[in-house]
Image (cartoon, rainbow, N blue to C red; front, side, top):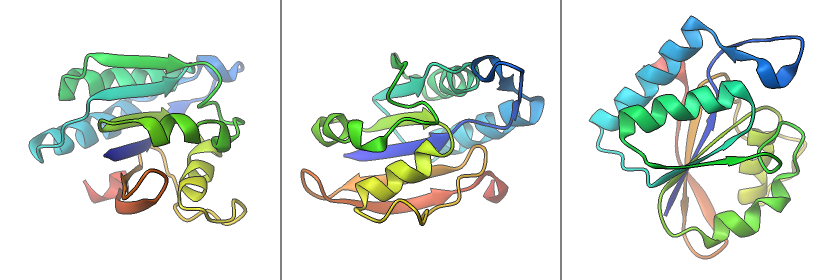
Length: 153
């Protein structure tokens, strides 16, 4: 089972964080990444995204390009300040490849939690539209398959 962890694309920050939307560059970053994955034959069964507008937009672009019908919003598990430990039971129970769309500082913390690393030293720098693919080796053992920053596309 593969878990794709994606930080939303570049966003315009509004006075109310939940209303921040993707910039033109952010939409282009996400579209390019989704098209690359589609052409590479990546199949994702479902998307789980935060309730913030920029994550919703990012998830919507992926769903359209990769033809994903199963989209879920999480109002509390993928917020910037959420504790990744609360998401681990759900992730360890997933059976099919899933995309998570979230924010800083949550996403680096999640990667560290899945790899059982101290949270104060991020293993991956999550720039906007950066994707990390992890693969589950056993029920709770994960490894990084690849990291794909938008600059490489």
